Amino acid sequence: MKVQYLPSIQKRGKFMRYDTAVILKRYFLCERALVIGQAGWLSGIPYFDIKMKLPKMMWEDAMTANELRNRVYELRFPSRMLEIGDDQALVDLIHQSFNAPNPLAFVMSLSRVFKPVLKQAYKDYLEMADVIGDGPTHRFLELAIREKEDQIQTLEKYILQYLEKEDHQNIGTALQWVKELQNKLDQIGGIGIENCKGTAVDLSDKVFSPTEVPKRDNRFIPVRFYWPDIVDESFPYGEGVKLQLRSAISHLNEIWAVENAGFILYEFAEDLGWDFIYDAARWVYDESRHCTMGYERLKQWGFEENELPLGTYIFESCKGKDPVYRLGMLFYFESKNIGKKPERVKSFAEFNDQVSQHDMDFDWADETIHTSYGKRWLSAILEKRGLNPKDYQKIKDECDRLVEGVISSVTKEEVQQITHITENMIKKAEHFAAAYEGKY
Ligand SMILES: [Fe+2]
Ligand SMILES: [Fe+2]
Image (cartoon, rainbow, N blue to C red):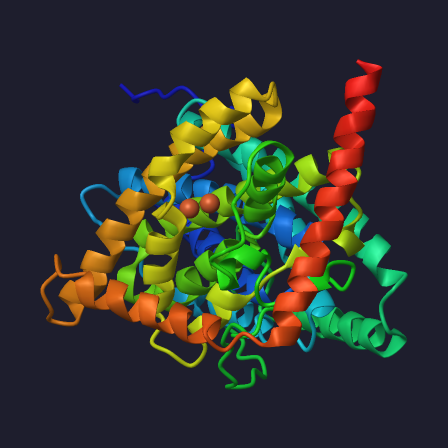
C-alpha cells in the first residue's frame, strides 16, 4: 500500500536552522563593524547633541549584536565559528565608510544608508522567520527595528539643525559620499537575506584612525582646563553653589571620557575581541550619560552653552602615545574621586539639591562597573603583550606623568581666562540661587 503524507502547506518552515544562522551572522558582522566605526568617530564629531546621542545608539547596536552572536552560536551548536566568509565585501565596505570626508558625511552614512538598510533587513527577516521555531530571534529583532527607527529619526533631527550652520561645500561633499556608499552597497547586493554578490567594489586602502585632537561644538567655550582648581591648587573646591557648579561642570567635562572610551573601543576592538567591544560600548554610553547629567543641570540653572567651558587636557595628554594610556586614563581619572562621591551625595541632600544628589548616586554605580572594566581590560592587554597582567603601576605612573606634563604647560592667559569664566558662572549661579530663595 502506498505511504501517505500530510502536506507542508503552512508558510512556516522556509528557513532551516543553518540558513538562519548564516543570515544572523551577517547581521552580527555588520552591527559589530558599525559599533567600531561609531566609537572611532566620537572624538571627530563636533556636534554636541550627536556626540551625546550616538553613544546610546552604539550601545543599543552592541546589545543587538550580542543577541545575534549568541543566537548564531545556539543555532550552530556545537560550532563556535563566526567566520566572515561571503560577507567580506560587506564588512570591508562598512570599514571603508569610516573614511568619510567630514563628520556630517559619517553621520549621514549612518542615518541614510546603514541604519535604514539594517532596519529593512530585520523586517524582511521577521517576515520570513518562523515565530515558533525561531521565536527568540523575533523578540530582539523586533526591539532592534524600533531602536533603529528611533536612531534614524534622532540623527536626522540633529542633522537638519546642524545643516543650517554647516558650510555648503561640506554639505555637498557629505551628500556625494552618501550617494557613492549607497551605490557600492547596491553593487554588492545590500544587507539582506540573500548572500552578498561578492562583487568587488572599488575601495580605497586608506586606514581610518580616530582623531587625537577632539572636535568640539563651537557653541561652547573651548579650553584645555575647565576649572581653575585643575591648574591652581589654591582655588577652593567650594561649598554650596560653588560645589554644585563644580560637580555639574565635572560631569559636563566627562565629554573627554566619552571621546576617550570611543577611541579605545576602536583601537583595541581587533586585539581584545567581542567581549571587550561589548563592555566598551556600555562604557562609552555611561560616560555620555554623565556628561549629559552635567549639561542638563547647568541648562536648568539658566546657563547658555557660550558660558560653559569644555576642556581637553586629559584627552590631549595621550596624543601620539600608546593607546594603552588612554585606557589607563579612563580607569584612573574616572575612578579617582569615587570615594568622595557618597560624601557629595550627602552634601547635595543637605542642600536640598535632589537632582545633583541623584546624578552623583547613579554616577557612582556606573563608576564601580567601570573599575572592573578597567582592571579586566588593562590586564588583558598586559597579558597579550607578555607582561605581568596585575602590574598596572607603570601605566598609572605614566598616566600621572602625562597629565602633569600638560598641567605644567598652563599659561598665565589660560589661568586668567578660566578664572574669569568660573567667576562669571559663580556670580550668575548666586543670583539665580538668591532669586529662587526669594520666590519659594
Ligand atoms: Fe563618568
Ligand atoms: Fe567612568
